[in-house]
Image (tube, rainbow, N blue to C red):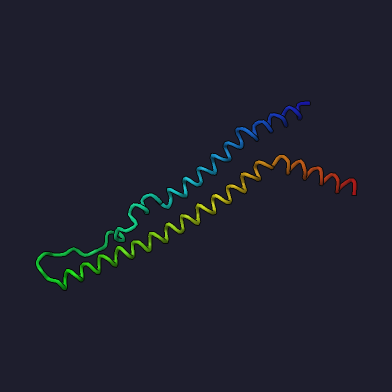
Length: 130
């Protein structure tokens, strides 16, 4: 009789506290990936020069030097944009993979008691009745 009491308490935990813990863990993984790739910082600095690389204009009127400084600064911003887009794409892929994997693992966790019970029933059937 204590087995059935234990099994009932296990099911009560599994579908309340256990399921909530599983969903919270899934959310923690998504939060970690989001912050690991620093998505808000990357979006905020999308058009900033890469690693603050650039030229500073040294005053005076020299159109060639002004154009050279302008081109170098545009190229550094373009390079920074491309690198940050690459990291945003990697973050999106990691978030998508974590979301899909978390969904399937949560579904398996939700169905685990039924899958285990079904496995025992099928095992006994194949062992003794076939």
